[in-house]
Amino acid sequence: MRITDIIKRHKPAFSLEFFPPKSDEETAQLFQTLNDVRHLNPAFVSVTYGAGGGTRDRTLQIVEQAKSKIGLESAAHLTCVGHSRSDLTEILDELAHSGVENVVALRGDPPKGEPRFTPNPNGFRYASELTAFIRESYPLCIAVAGYPEGHIESPDKESDWAHLEQKVRAGADLIITQLFFENSHFFAFERHMRERGVSVPIIPGIMPITNYQQILRFTRMCGASIPERVVSDLEAIQHDPESVHRYGIELATKQCRDLLAHGVPGIHFYTLNKSRATQEILSNLNQ
View (tube, rainbow, N blue to C red):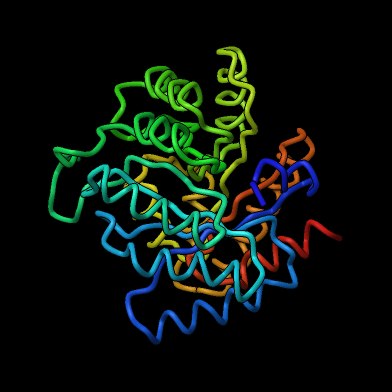
């Protein structure tokens, strides 16, 4: 089922994002995690590509089996990195043949060690071009990424949000945002996009903090900010993993409650391939 149809039925729609593991053992562990979250009845799960698109086969395997064998509606991430148009056609044909109805169209991050993105000579430079390519030939539901604080490579937020509008005009059906820790960033972003005439659903992305050093790395990579009060709180407990976990769950729960009170259509959780934090947050929200 298309995500846009699902979120009309699930109010709110909770979704989970996973990344493809690097080994057969980790793949087996991930499938166990996917089975474990079935009882949460997620609206859908999405599976990323590794940096540079190097995990294509595992991404497709997980997405296809999550849908066909586990019964979870799935969305495959698809990037411009390293792919020609013929490569992309092959992937999209496989997804369509397997019954997957949803993709997340991204430009993608450059491979490790490369300072900037270089498009394939026969591929695409921007997610908007990839989105238009998919929309032209495939009846898929297309999600694209939005950045409440602006993309790290963009000179300013307004420029980045103008590019996001182009992705929607090219055929995107919904927007899933990058992680953020201040809801005011999301509300300003959402308001700006609506003022630009963008009417597709905008789903906020939430990453529960479960490891202090890890979240510092992630935010540096994606350009998201952490409030000073949160940094101060975490510094005081960073050597107590369970305290960090509890703090992160409480913070994410507060964020989600506020977002839901403002009428967001759903929340997309960045799980880091672990289900405990998401399960605890959803349990809190149901209390």
